[in-house]
Image 1 (cartoon, rainbow, N blue to C red):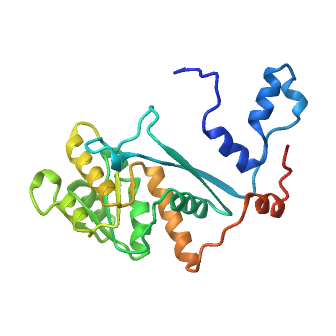
Image 2: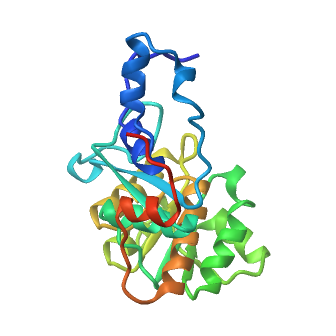
Image 3: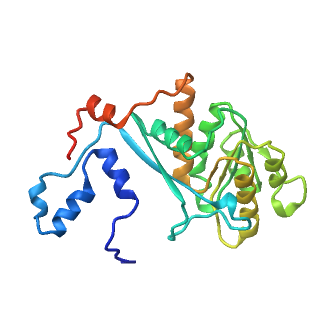
Amino acid sequence: MLEVNPRASRTVPYLTKAIGIPFVKIATRVMLGEPLKSFGDLERRLPYYAVKTVVHPFKRLAGSDITLGPEMRSTGECLGLDDDLGGAYWRAQLAAGMNLPRSGAVFVSVKAEDKRAIVPVARRFANMGFKLMATGGTARVLEESRIPVERVRKVQDGSPNIVDLIEQDRVGIVINTPSGSEKKLAGAAIRAASVSHDVPLVTTLAGARAMILALERAKEGQGPLLTRSLQEYYENYQIPVRR
């Protein structure tokens, strides 16, 4: 147990919208004495996906390390709904201001325990026509898996290195999972350059997997992104809305 907060987080209104159940109203009535069981079954199995993403202030905070931890760092949130996970993630990222590129170079640098797990993701990027770039250890794992990759210099190896390439707009996506001491300075420089040059950045394996799903969905759609209101989702999928 880390902490107990007697309040509703910002997630509650997003959850309410996604599934059509007014949790704040129900919680208020429970606090006033109504039994929770009087509200019936509150479990929902949705026939569509809902993805909540965050908006971070890193670009405005020069010098801060772009990593995630237990503390709250976001300054806004967005919700994406779609029939599949890739589409929902894509919509959420677009709403948050991250326009995912359909082509170009993907730089991959992951910590030791993620190197094998990143191989299937990297292969899918390559199959979509993206050019892969990586530094030493990650590049070696990709080469051993017969995935074409361009080796680039680490930050500490002098110019031209990966930060230089990001600053020259030669990188479209950065996948960097932070590791221990590093390597801390090198990783922080890569993430800072990505944010300052509006290059989509993911710092977890789960984020990398979600991003490739979104790109595959975007490529599949090709045409303009169609939008639907919450009411249309509820009506189309016959979601019973609680008032």
